[in-house]
Length: 497
Image (cartoon, rainbow, N blue to C red):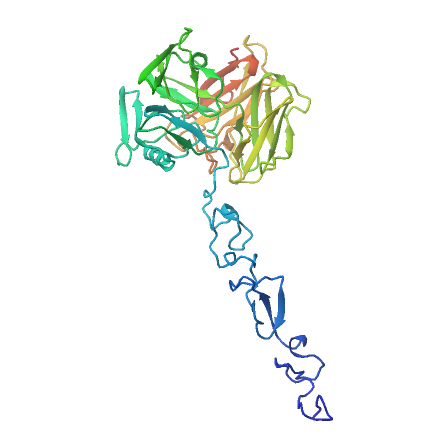
């Protein structure tokens, strides 16, 4: 037989024979062990932090693992023994602990709601005694006991959450820690919190969706307004509610320090106190009436891939939105009527968005940028629900003379359940900009439930309501509610300056 060294004839290995890991060229091809392509070797990686996972960039082929090397080459940080694919993701340390390229709450192993709210909290100061309060931000589904727990979690001392029942004229009390009277806490409603010491309620949540509808019964109604309501006093509140068709004659606040009520009589100059977000006030109404409070920037027509931003300004100016999927923003979109459009009503459509994604934006009116106090405004797109149904609603809007078309007016439309069939409550907000013809048009089939997780189911042939609000800025406002059987066309509307 041919040997590797015929002179000494000591190796005894045959050309083409099997190569084994022994430090010898067994098959006499000039290559030894793992240098020989016939040899099947293992890639071992250096495990510098001794967590049994090695650095894939620091590897060697060998028959057996050299000292300090392992065959698991998936460590993404070989200097930290607590970071490797065998570690459970820590959802609050800004580190990709389990080496799946996703950190904290972006990791599907974490609760999607585990991270801090993308919106700043609203801190509401509490004094010893009875504090008139209400939600200033969107708290989501919240009960009285949740309020107790939230305040206690930040060191507060609260033992009662109380609401006023306008229908009965009586207070209803939930005692913290006990199961009875654990009522729901709603945006737009006012409550009392009894605290045994000074503290605060750090309300966690993003902005309450706009417009916020508040309904009054005959009598005393406890209401509260959202964070985005600014520069309003008691007389402003009277005038605003009455301008929408309401009939209120008193706005009343409770002074925790004195334990007394202070009353502003609508139309008179005394006790014209400021209306603060997150504080409860009593409004005395002489008729049952619902009114809508609109955010300075309104989000409407929200789908999985688009959203409309609209607002009004004190004086005519250009309007733009700068937005992005992070607080860096970076994308600027003009009013739908063009870059040079100067108006006091502004309408911007954002498109080609990603589904189920958070977007941040600033509002640019002329040379002034509103970044929501540094927090930026925000919205989240909905899921992709497939093609919507077809059902047009349309109508016309005129100026106060009922003759001149009010082109450029923003019309907001919401479907409200009226027959108890289909979806409950109200739909997401739809909108359109009145054209030169005087007409507005919305596709009701695109309306979703408020959290955008499904289309809003309603009765197109009648039984449900369309709540229609027209905002012409300096030209005035108008509102009406029509049955879904009478929405194409809806009755003409005239703005009230």
